[in-house]
Length: 158
Image (cartoon, rainbow, N blue to C red; front, side, top):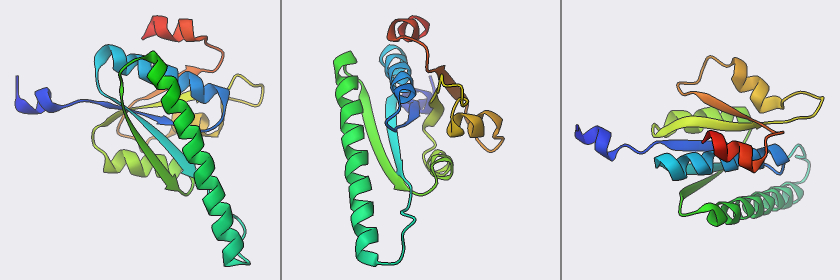
């Protein structure tokens, strides 16, 4: 087997937020990595504060958003730890989520699959699912996990 094939381990990128469907995406990616190898990359994106009158207030808002992102990542990491021994990377960026996801995929050539959870609400699947379902700019496949799936159903398809 060529050296590049032996050393290659794909990464599953999961966008992290505080939604229930995000948990579905984490479950899917974790079980796929546990079964097939690789790494789960958990990415949180902090949207820049829309408050620029006082720099001190903006700094406080940014620090609070960073702390919330770190707590959310910690909770997802703890959940993954209950599933098994899976390699995890975390990334926190600031900006528009879709733009930051695309930039990370371009920068990290080992990211092979983007995993998103679709909302089961009547408002639609969510902005990122809608964006990436029609995007032609990605070089990787997108896996969309329905928010209504149970852990058991997700594990069965992994």
